[in-house]
Length: 368
Image 1 (cartoon, rainbow, N blue to C red):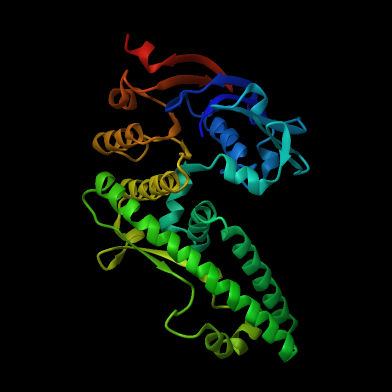
Image 2: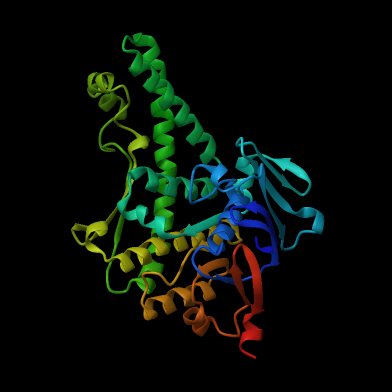
C-alpha cells in the first residue's frame, strides 16, 4: 500500500502542510530543526497513532493547539477512501478509513511502517524489551492469530504477578493461572520462533549485501530453557518469584541474541556497522512482510547518510531502489543519494524550512 498525498496540521512546528508523494523514494531535506523529521512522525501516526520519538504525544501537538491531524490519500483508493488520525492533548485518538471509524489494531494492520533512525541502535545494545517489540511487530503481521495469543499471555502474566505480589496464594488459584500462563507462553513462543525462523534467511541475504565485512549470527532466546518443562521451572522458581513479586521465567524474558563470532555484536561492531545491521533487520522485516502479504510496507528513514561512508550509503540506496517499497528519507544534504538513484527512479525531492514545504522537484526534473 502506497501513500499518494499527505496532509498534516498542528504537528510540532508544522501548522499546515500538504504534498503529493512519490510512489517510490521521497527525500525530505533541510537544516536541523526545519521540521523534516516531524513529517516522518506524522506518517508514523498514520500507522500506530503515536510518535516514534516520544511516548508523550502532547509534545508532538503544536504549542497552543488542542489536537493534531494526519491525513493520507491511499494509492488505488477513491478520494473518499482516505486515512485520517486525530490525537488530542488529552490522549484521545480517533482513526477513520473509507469514512468509517477503525480501532488501533485495524490501523496497525492497514499501513505498516518501518522506522530506521538514531534510536534503532537499541535493537543491538538496548534492553531486551526493544527486541521483543521488534519480534512482536513481525509476529503481528505474519500470523493472524498472533495478537489474540499475545493478549492472552499478557493477561495471564499480569494476573500471576498480581498473585505473587499478594504473597499468600491459594494453591488452586495458583494452579489455574499457571495453566493459563503456560498455555499462552508456549503458543506465543511457537509463533515468535516461527517468525524469527522465517526472518532469518531474509536478514542473512540483506546483511551480506549491506555489511559484507562481518557475519552477524542471529538467534532467538525464548525466555526459559526449552529443554525443560515450564511447569517444573515455575515450581522451582516460585519462592524466588514470591520474594521478587514477579514471574522470572517465560516469554516476557525473550530476546534476540546477535553475535559476531563468539562476541556480542553490540561490543564488536562500529557505529556505522551497527546502523547497517539494524537496517538489514528492518529491511528484512519489510521483505518478509511483502512475501507474506503480497504488498509492501513503508520505510521511514531519518538522516540516512549519518554514520555511513559513501560505499555503504550507495549500497543501501541501491537496495531501496530495487525493493518494491515506498520510502520517506530525511537528510541535510541529498546530493550523495541523488547520485545513486538518478533520473530513472520514481522519486521526489522536497525542501522543508521552518515547518513549510519550500520546494519540490521530481528526480526527472532534477536530471533534465
